[in-house]
Amino acid sequence: MKKLKLFTSALLASAMLSACGGGNEPTASTENISTADINQTSESSAEATETESKQEDLSISEQKIWEQDGISVTVTGISTDGLMGPELNLLLENNSDKDITVQAHYTAINGYMVSSTMSSDIAAGKKANDSLTFSQTDLEQNGINTIANIEFSLHIFDPESYDTLYDSELIKLNTNLAEGFTQPSDDSGEILYDENAIKIVYKGVNSDNSIFGPEVVLYIENNSEQTITVQSRDTSVNGFMVEPSLSSEITPGNKAISGMTFMSSDLEENNITEFETIETSFHIFNENYDTIVDTEPITITIK
Image (spheres, rainbow, N blue to C red):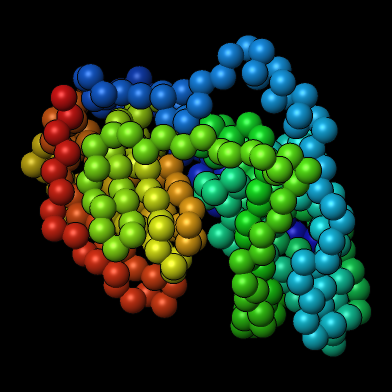
C-alpha cells in the first residue's frame, strides 16, 4: 500500500497567504491591512489562554462517515499537533476489487472555507490510516481558534485512469467543543456585490502576506443552495490591465476570506507603485459550470 500526501496546492495557498512580500512590492497608501485586521475576533490574553486549553482537550467521536460498494471511511480521532495544521484522523478501508485514491474536497471549519490536504492510495483488499490536514494559515486568517464544526466531501477515483468512482455528499461533523459555540463573523467593509444570495465585501489591501504580490482581501458569503466559485475578470489597476489570481469555492451556507492576488511583476511592468483604483468584474458559477452571474464592472477606490 502506497500512501501519498499531496501538499503542493496547500503549500502554494499557504505561501500566498502567509509569506512576507519583498521590499519592492507596491503598497496601498492608506488601506494596507494585516492578518490581524482580517481576523474576525480580537481575543484578550486570558481568552487566548482559555482557547489554547480548549484546543488541547479537542476530541471527536469515532464514527463511520461514508460507505459504499465495500469502501468505507471512518473518523478515528483529531489532533492539533500536525506539521501543517490540525489533522482529522481517518481509517480508509477498500474491500472492493479496485485500487482507489481518496481525497477530500470543499473543506470548511466553523462555516469558513479552508485549504486541506489528503490523498491516499489504497490497493484492492487493503486499508490505510491517513489524516485530513487543515491549513493552520487559513485557520488563523479566518480567526478560527476553536474547531467546532467540520465539513468536507470525499472524492474517490481510479489512480490509473483518474476516472471518478464516487463523490460523496457534504459530510458534516461536530467535535466535543461544538455545543454552544458560535464562530464570530465580520462582514464589515465596502459591499461590492449582494445579489442571488451571494455577498462580496471589500476588506482592504494586504501587502504583507504574499510572496507573489499584494492582495485585495474579499469576504465572500454564500447563502444560496449551491456550491459556487467566484473568479475575477477584466481587471485593471490605475487604468492598466492586469491578470490577478482569484478563484474561491464556497459551499452552501458558508463563507470565505479570499485574496485577489496581483503579481508584483505585472505591477512593475506597468510602473504601478500604489493602488489608486481597481476595476474588476466577478464571474460566479456553480458546480456544473453554469454561470450564475457576470457582474458589471466594479470600481474600488483606494483611499
